Image (cartoon, rainbow, N blue to C red; front, side):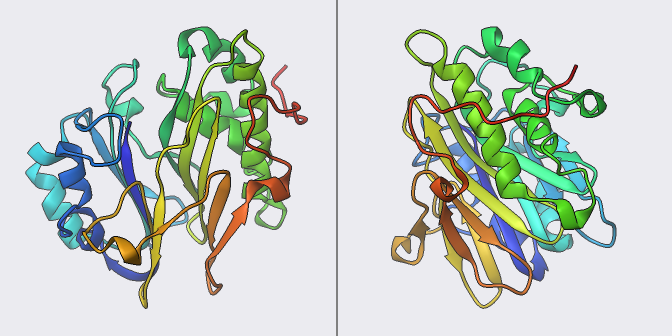
Length: 279
């Protein structure tokens, strides 16, 4: 499985979390400690917000540990909200369009997880993407399909009408119904981060399987959410409960809220919530 970090807070250089820590994301690309795949060398990516409403991105297909440009970029790039991701592919090609994070309009998204029997379920899951967003489908991963399905739940509307948590839980409920509706139920793991340049949301959820690890830590600078701790000070990292979302909004305290409050319970089957389906 992939490894990632997401940060929201005071503007800092990306190297503070991506390359400098003892167990940095670059180190995790070589040897992750809490992942089913110890090596995450199938590409990497950065996403960050600066002076423009849409995020900047840098993605490459080579391993993070072998790209010297990554260290220079992380040293000189500063941001108040950024993502970093190292990939362990689960069946889709190692191409730049398949590397995280993904972006559409002001939104940035990255994912660590898995949809069982993706080859069979790809078509019905892609049907959850509205026609007007399908043109943004550049890769072949389940992650990008999930991202666009989430955006299709009203996140491209005016800012006052956006509800990222409800949009995500609706998409998760629909996919859970699809994987659970097949005899025996296929695993579905979703540990993901979503941001719009202002606020950060990080989700930990699974159906028919155990959820991938996720932690967060607050400091005077802000909050960082990670797949696994970046150092040996494990007591300073808070595990995120299963079926929960970490909410880091601008000028607000960090919250961890159960997705049950949004109608999503961790189970092998869920009622299908109303989706905005493409015709």
